[in-house]
View (spheres, rainbow, N blue to C red):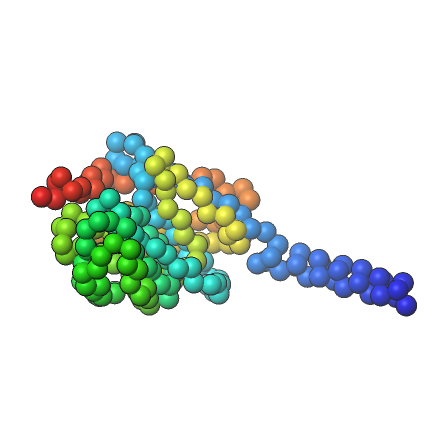
Length: 219
């Protein structure tokens, strides 16, 4: 009886491996590296790079919630990318009160004045697009939320680099967006074929990023 069970188990395992090998979505997941620089060739942080499959459906994936805190009189992080339908919390870790507001058509909302240690109910971002978040009490405080339909996105670090992994082989429209583009100027875009031989993609913007406003500049 035990021998028969082992034989059936090995047969099922062999069949599962064969099916995985024949499925394009399971066969291989590639990595794609990016570098973003300004017009002078200097690294650019806070560039969101996102990939949308061409000729393939978007995969179902869990919404990943995010947090944008108020800390040291700034929103942190400055730039957040999320998938459509995700929710964002806005906890206050400052000694000062804050009043969080978005006038964006993609997601207009308001969290009226609240004190340190308070975590208001999260805000659900149910439409794709760009949302600019302000503090009505401190005019230098600003954050950007890029809401995307695709689950394939990443943000560059201080070195201007980032990597997307677990991309199924295929063609993708890849875009790069920075807050200085706002919601009017289009992101940089190109279509690439992704596989294990894909070369790194370098994005060069035609501007130098405007420094983020600070408390001293806000007064």
